[in-house]
Length: 158
Image 1 (cartoon, rainbow, N blue to C red):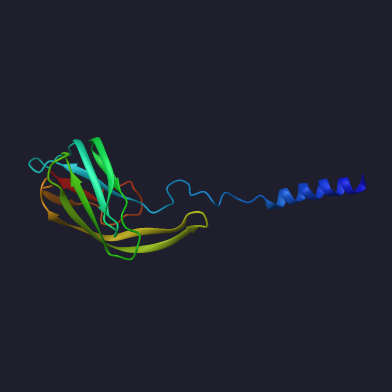
Image 2: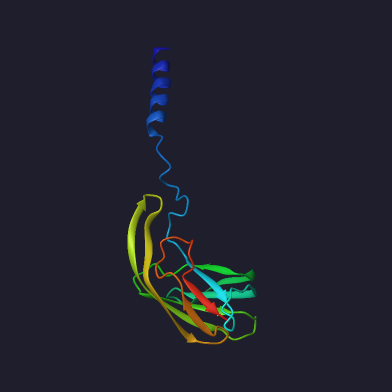
């Protein structure tokens, strides 16, 4: 009986001291932020909502489709997290229509977040080039750094 009490107390104390914090959960947007893209009319300069939008991104091993969205007024796009200073993004508004290619240039800064989240990349000095102009007619720069996903970084003019 004496050993049984000792075993129960040892198990209880072991459980009590082995409980740690929630370091393995990446909460509340602590990860690498995505680029926020909004859409404007090239004639009026006012914000518009696109009926449909297809986005694909080249992360270094070919185009990766991010899929179609309907009734889009903004879109969050993950950028590359390797050491290449640019990401190529592709946009289409029709299934069999033309595709615009945009190169987003930037510099990155890495920040350690936690054991669960690892390293977070912040993007600075954003600039964009319109490589293939149809259906996107022009670009308008927004905020030139990405620290969170609140502010628009790029406006596409249709």
